[in-house]
Length: 80
Image 1 (cartoon, rainbow, N blue to C red):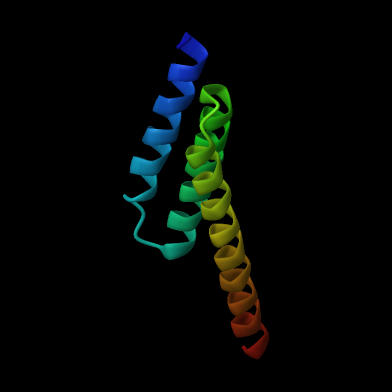
Image 2: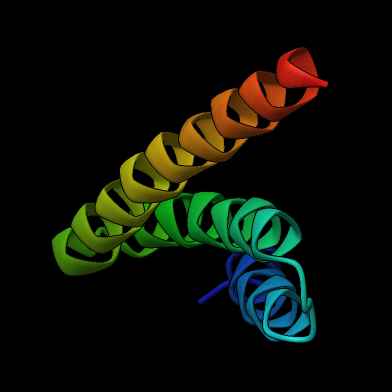
């Protein structure tokens, strides 16, 4: 493995650990989305389908929930 591939793996791990330190769900989902994105790139470098597939699925789930949280927040502010 080359240095760039290793670095991408460590960045993915670091952003994942950073995500779990977040108390607010929106911040957690955002940082875990970033982590999943790095796992996808890492999986491409390794030619690892399981990493790529899991990363894509996590990204889809987090994007869906982030949009849901955003629309819920917008609906709440409109009611005020």
